[in-house]
Image (tube, rainbow, N blue to C red; front, side):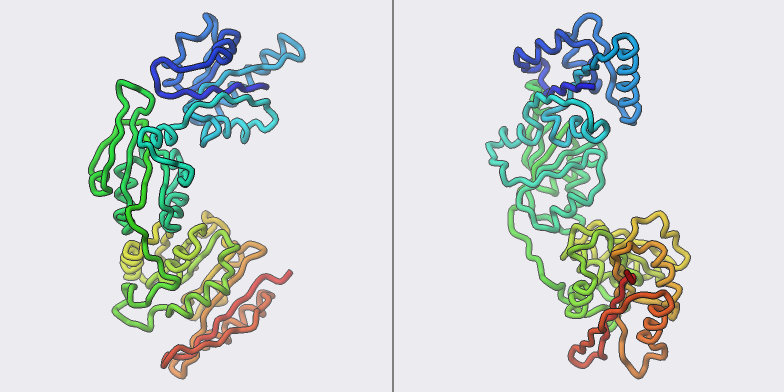
Amino acid sequence: MKFIVVGLSDEREPQLDSEVIGIIKQGKVFSGGKRHHELIAHLLPERAEWIDITTPLDAVFEQYEKRETILAEKEVGATLSIIVFASGDPLFFGFANTIQRKMPGAELVVYPTFNSLQMLAHRLIMPYHDMRIVSLTGRPWPEFDKALIENVKKIGVLTDREHTPATIAQRMLEYGYNNYKMYVGVHLGNPERECVSTLTLEEAALAEFEHPNCLILVQTKQATRHFGIPDKDFTLLDGREKMITKMPIRLLTLQALELPQKRVFWDIGFCTGSVSIEARLQFPHLQIEAFEIRPECEAIMQSNVRKLGAPGINIHMGDFLETDITVLPRPDAVFIGGHGGRLKMIIQKILTMLTDDGVIVMNSVTSPKVTTDSHQLWDEACQAFGLRQEPPLRIQLNDYNQIIILKSTIQK
C-alpha cells in the first residue's frame, strides 16, 4: 500500500503546487478529516472515494486494508494508493507518524506545508529554532509539566478542546509558573478568521478561543531552582520537623534509588511529600506514584506540590496493602517512607510489580525510643525474599538521630 500525505493549512483555497494537483487529478481513493474534505472537495475527481479520518483510528486503517483487499481481488499485484490530507506538516505530530506506526511496511510520500506553530512564530516574527515543542492534542500533561520543571525558556504547545489556552494558563498559575507570556494563534492561515493574541497568564486563564488554536509560551524571567529543596519550604504534618526526610538525607536517598536511569518511581508513605516532590523536580522524566495511609497528609501533599511547582505526582490515599496496584505502571524504583511494622508484607506486595532491574530503598532511624527495629525487619524481609542488599549508608545530621539508608535489588 502507498500513502501520499499532503499537508494543508486552514486557507479556503489551499496553495498546492502543480505536482500535487496532478496527483489529485489521477487519484481514486482519498482520506482526511471532515475539515480537510471541505477545503479540498472541489479539486477531487468526479468518482473519488473518500474515507473519513475519525476516532477510533483502528477503524480507519481497517477501511484502508479492506479497500486494498478489494483492489487485489480485481487486479492481481496492483498497489493501492491513498491520498491523505492532513494539517500542516504531516510528520509534525501528524498523520504520517500514525501511518508509520500502524503500517510500517507501507510506502510513504509526504508533501508538507508549514505547521501551526511555525505559522504563529512567523506572524510574531519570532525565531523558533530554540523552541521546545509539546503536543497536548489527545495527550496528557507529563511532557508539558516536564518542560515547565526543566525551566524551558520557549515552549510551543499544540492544543485540543480539553487542553485549551485557558486550562493551560490555569495549570501554570496553580503550580506557580507565572513567569511566562502566552501568544495564541487561532485559525492560522485563514485570512477571514485568523487571530493572534498576546496575553499574560492571568488574562489567558479567563479567555476563550475558537478551535483550532496553538500557543507559544516565552519566559519573562528565569525561575529559581534549588538543588535540594530547603526543609523550611515544606508544609509539615502538625508542624513537626521530624516528620520530614531532611534535605541532605533526601538527596542521598534519591541517589540510592538511581533515579536518572529509572522510569517509574513509587513513594510508599509519602507523609509531607518531600521525597516525591524532590524526585519530581530533580528528575522530571519520572512517572511518580505516591501512597499514604493518613488522610490528613493528602492536603499537605497538595499544598506542597503547588507551592513548590511539582505538577504530575499521582496521589493514592489509603492502606497500601489494600490498594489495587495492578492497574499502575510497574516501578523500577521504590522508596518505603513508612511501614507501620508491616514491612515484610509491603515488600512482598512490591515484588509482585517491581521490574527485574528495580531497586528498593528505605531509611531506618537509629534511636532508643524506636520500639520496632526497622533495620532488623528489613534484613529479615530481604533474606526471606532473596533480595541482594547493598552495604548500608549511615549518616547523622546535627542533633538528629542517625539515619541508615538501606538498599536492595533483585538477585540475578
